[in-house]
Length: 139
Image 1 (tube, helix red, strand yellow):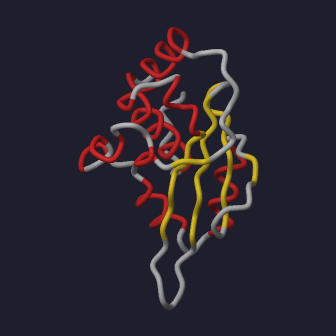
Image 2: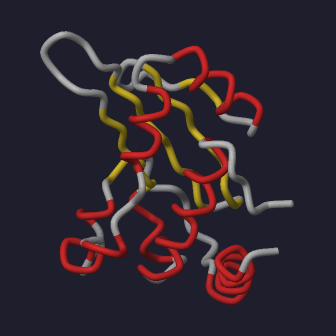
């Protein structure tokens, strides 16, 4: 088990609150303190997803479905993951075309701020995005 995964599970078990999901997707920058924290070395590694799957939406879909992702209507292709019982995340892909390069985004339910601190959310992003890219540390 990776240190990021261990920290994620420990924090979740100790700090998760019995509150409902907000039901709205937010980016990491929408979280309190997120616009400063999620820069440089703490940025979500969505560029790797865009590079790998920007011209292969079918491969993205296959990878996400293998991890239990459920299709959602965002971007060109998007999947929702129940990372933990109270912590859903979505990964959205916009395919490359003649005018724009591919891009990807990881979104979180707005309630995540009640369960996990920013550094643990970052670790969760490494685990989920890495698993989609095929370099899972969940073994």
